[in-house]
Length: 375
Image (cartoon, rainbow, N blue to C red; front, side, top):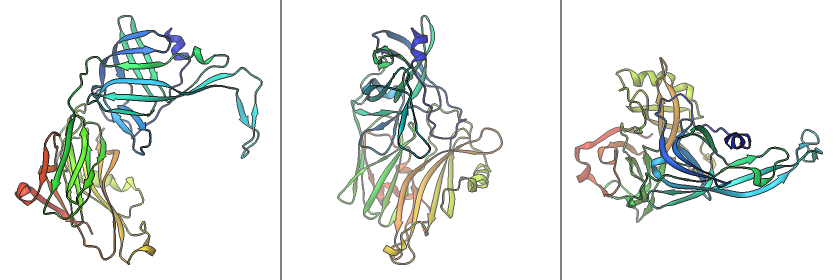
């Protein structure tokens, strides 16, 4: 059976970032139901560095989930049709020429992920591959966005996973992440870096002083608050739990600054402000700005755009390599607008959800560390 499954599936590789990070592969006990009714029960291990990735419907940001976040995955055809092989008649033409050959099945899938907090995410999966080990041996299973079958096959001949259940995961109570900001100006935006899942969440702002991310998954979150007078960063050394942990050393930030110019992304002025984490997963707080990127015709002279970003690195041997970038604050600064100051706040660092944060001069106290003017 398994040779048939492998023969009728095509793995579509997709890479989020530079490969090479030394992450422990994630495994879990799973029960997999195939479209032909067969069941597989064993240990499933994802192949590659990235967790399960899905592009939710009506959402521009992809989301990632670990096995431990998931109760079940349901995978069903969104469309299925028989097609004939074809090519374009000539370069630049939209006219197709069909071969007189047998048809093949072509299927698109839609996937629903049910999380341990009860939330459901429906969208298009980024194709993933898994190793599965049960009592009879080892196999590969593919969870795919699309499947193109073999010539002469029928749609009912294609075998694919229709569900993956993780019986070891139990439902957890939903945990809110929210807070109120006082004494630092009107709140414009608040974002949170989900350290465990390496994604950025955006909060709902109300009343000019409160923010609410809704219910979030267990873990720790670095929070970044942008107001009309300052930027407050929760930059911490927390790293994903599946990362190896060689401590950073003196001189590492200068070594990163040495290769930093190679990461050119059209920002003329860029600064590495802080470094924390480990040599296997180092996080840098980066400030970028450029005037040319701003529509100068619509603002007073002197305007510019600036970003505050988290850039993640690892040191495989002698030279640091960039793996991911996350924008946590972006601003279109008007020419006459007040220059904001950037602070690092301990109260916003490695926050565990479940309590309402109160960010004000009294709770911040002496833990407010000035970093630089965002000019």
